[in-house]
Length: 288
Image (tube, rainbow, N blue to C red; front, side, top):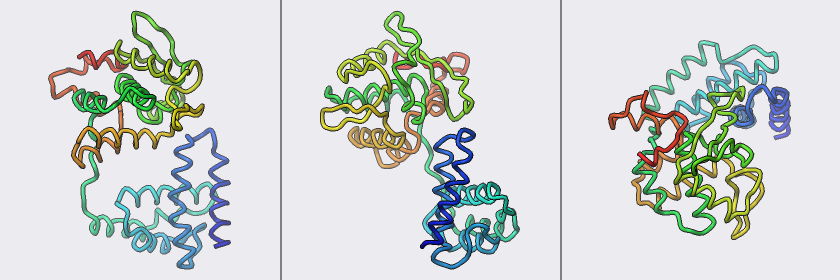
């Protein structure tokens, strides 16, 4: 146990030195996925850092029996990163590891959960479950803003009152400062529909929010100061989908990628909307 903790602390230190070069979520993912190898080695005896190709191959075969292939790929990436940061030889490039992964692919067939587009119809069904209390007003505004601005969860939780650029004609324009596809923070602007702007203003007024994060945790009837966690948005969308009576497959798909911009955009295409007609900054999908 002491050896495992020492290894994990060392990896934490290595990853921490990359602060600023990678997002917090990326560094957390590396840490979490390397822990799988570290804990397996603590039980089985091999050294996790540096690990031998044989140890990594055995870990893939026996140390992650319940994970899918994507889980194994993430763990391989974390093992590779940890060894490179430590200046050690990368064991994952060895043929033993490649063969082990191929075996696991054949043993673990299955289709991944397909992320579903948040279509207008699904959005309206989710909104219908939102009451006029604080939680309902927050969730309504959150879903509508995410839909209009094509935001991922991680983008939604970073939006602040100060990101509002203009407010004209009953519509607010926001700056989305950073995203997964914009790691260097060039930012993009997006305009909310009049309905979404009204929903957002109603929430902010009821919650007495005049600065800081738009979407926050609620304890009973008290609104906190910290932003929601991205995972919380997933739980909110799942809870709303269950309340709307969606089937399990739809709920799982929405929970995988709640309010994501890419599925939203491409759900418009089968309805005859060409890419040239889609305003990628949002601006009134609800009006469609």
